[in-house]
Image 1 (cartoon, rainbow, N blue to C red):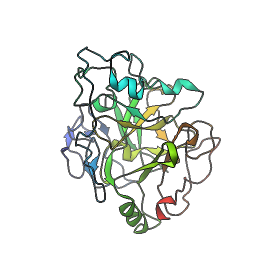
Image 2 (spheres, rainbow, N blue to C red; image 1 turned 90 degrees about the vertical axis):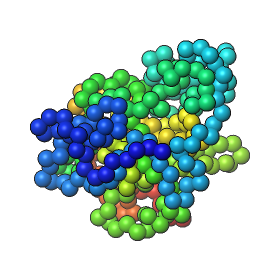
Image 3 (cartoon, rainbow, N blue to C red; image 1 turned 90 degrees about the horizontal axis):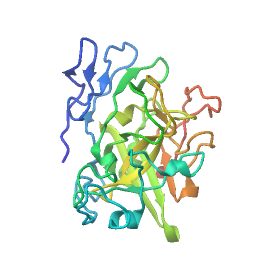
Image 4 (cartoon, rainbow, N blue to C red; image 1 turned 45 degrees about the horizontal axis):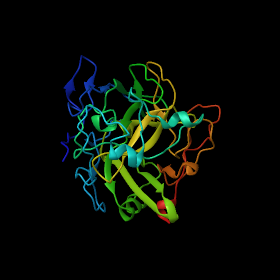
Length: 305
């Protein structure tokens, strides 16, 4: 079970910054708490998903089988993980699937896990290693809190998870119905389409328990995209990768509807995986500033049907 830290972070970095994770991440998350515009939310920090109401499986429980590879890093010829699910990453740890076309594709990824015999530095272990980039949470004038990078991020790099409580459909529905127009809705609904019309749904809500991903803003022209990644558990991590090279101090964003690039916002159905995001029960104005801005934040009412 992951450790949690309550309320506002207190691990000091310098006179103006503190560590958002309070030491729960391997790398400090810079946070400037001096905003007079936006009140900082009260929540518990967790680097990974935790079990919430309606979730039958504890995300920290190992439920997937492992490989018997004894090499430093797995190779497809001898690794049952790679043979079953395919190779997901390059030798540098970048996601391979974005090279399939000009736009990112949300193809589910399976990493080696705690039951695998390969080393912790196996090339098929990326998301499970956690945050590795220097990021900063800051306050904006029109979009509340946001996240920017303090270092250059190459295309295909894992950036962070969108972690929180994994909840069931009925709990997600109850929470959305209880919200008012003024409330922020953080619930992400990931729908993975398999053969024979089978659909696996995962609902993650970082409002009460969450990580840095809860501060990422929507953009109609984002620089991140979301991929469901499974390592130890059948419950996927909602991993965010760089869809292009991202420069220092750029704000990090993703499309709440699951689209990417210049595509019309909507689920990425052509890849077999639909990633949809729901953040409001009424249409709220979008302030992303992109040339293709839809003027309103995406609205997914499927959880209410």
